[in-house]
Image (cartoon, rainbow over all chains, first blue to last red; front, side, top):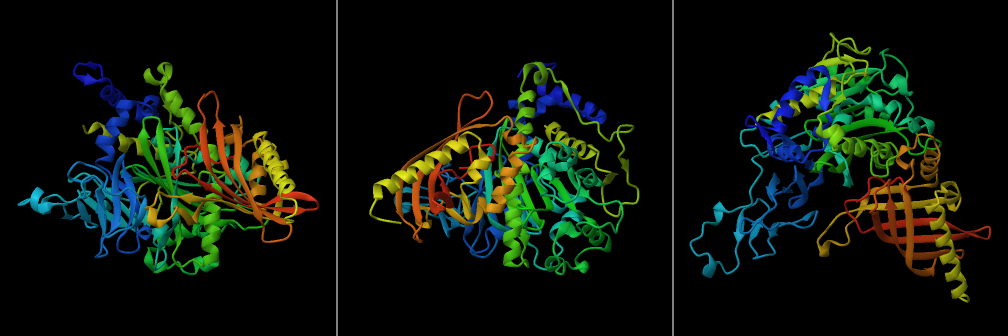
Length: 448
Length: 170
């Protein structure tokens, strides 16, 4: 990396972005640069709280799934005592992965190289030929390395690799208020349906996190075919009515909400009566419950790379009513110009088998590798990444436009009587949510 | 199915599969859709890597596609709109169907067909292909003198899909 006055090209780029972001300008280069990618793994993914899975994916003792924090492999496992652990997937002897199946149930993990064996708590309990090879050896110091911090909210489990990380609740800041009304309305809460979708997209992970942070504007054009085939009942321009929330610490949420509180149309995201009857007003504040009632669509990003979406759609408009689903998706970095998308479908534990199946179908049909909504996102995201990697545009630090909603640009205005935390704008023609995401990204990236 | 003429039946099945592949590769999705029975079930389960003793890793609950006639109709209708950017410009697919084996079906007018599928997919000016491979487990049914697809289960070899989307049919 060429250095000028002791500062690398990338450090200067980040310093410049710190200024340009205030004017709604973001250098394209951050979306495709090997040095940025390397620094993200070290400065962002190794420090932030990163999603590893949902508690309902590992319901029984011994259940495990393989997961990644940044690009580092971890075992997400429920130990024999019922505790959830996040263990680095590498034998302490030579570093070989001790777990090679993607999911399953195991009381122990054994390294295939020399046979070192660990309990699902991570404790090293077996070494072949121990008497001859390791007499006097302190096994207790050589267990699988745990992620320094593991915590959950509404079953969503996060881990941080930074011993100095703040508690998860502090990290989530104002976002907790919104997660409570999204995931916490029923007694039993939500559960994951089946295994996540996983697929590769030749695009930078931030583009997807940014899209879900509140790029509702793109639905008007990129996703126009959805209205042509009637899979979504709220008309495109009407759907832009609602609120953008900068919830703090880089987390954002966007609500599609009609201007009139009593306007006909989906309430509670379009959930049917069988579900709405299970929503308990006493689990949240009156303001949270009213916001949930008025919500047609909610979409957002938990910084850095976990997004969610809940919306009523149908896979077959002639035969199936719009059906609400919740998808949680993680944009896993796989290189400067490559991500792996992981996508989970969730539903309420109280849902009937019929609704659960229909909800999964609506999710798969719209947001999955085959999802007719999401298919179209897979076109611009790689193209944006390609531009970011060009010499003429990317390497010359040309700027991309994130100015929508800045003072004097567009119709969005600050909302002063919002009942929840955060900085809020309405309607949704506004990119403050994305600027909020990148402000937080810069804080991590510049704290070298 | 009649067991008296295995060779012609086998040839009929091969002809059907080759014709179907040509329709898909030519982007003639409405004509492909017309090959489906109205009770068609079209499924691609999610797969995970599992220990040998845990089986082949095909999900019972998670699907890349789990389709009926109506949901496939929506997909085909969407591809025909002017805003189906995922396939406009279209990716170029090539279906290779091999290892075809047939068995009698559950009904008189049905035949069960197992085959291997190799699907190459080219996008834009990228010279290398994305590819998918797997097994197809089909049921063909004769309706009004014509073979139609009544059931397809695609068992993919990939766990993480190496293609940017499934805006195509396998």
